[in-house]
Image: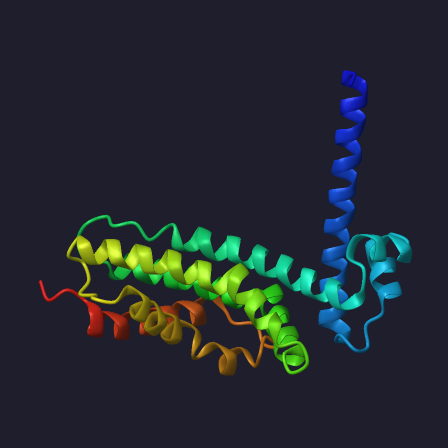
Length: 216
């Protein structure tokens, strides 16, 4: 195969990937705005700027499109959460400031407009498509929890925390960070200020350290 033919093939492949990503982004917007039952593939195609047949060529049917759109959105949210967790690196001494910073960033991720839309869409469609929960857990929740458990375990090994079960500690910290947010943000219909987010993070970390902080 000549170099020109290879470049042409690569360009076609990139174009197909770009089109697929555009369809997924449009589908998520439409499903989040209209709900699965009311949303139409023609509306998704119009939002993505492609022909309706192109949507079917890529995804086959509307139900598959919903699953793929939710998975793609979950992947995007995961990348943001993992970037926040990666900042949880032991610097020596009291981990309070470090945990508060990471907690604040995780709350920002949780309160991101797309994250609210993802949760609302998931809750709305879960009754008739229960496998959507597994998709989100595989693409997002489990990976973030595993990464956070690893970082907490490292802090425990360094003597900064008293943790025997990192997975359980992650559940406790996550509950403390996210528990107050749905009521405060009214399910994403009210934007929280940075000061409010930091207040929640500070309170959550304070309670967490009361249970898991080093006695030293």
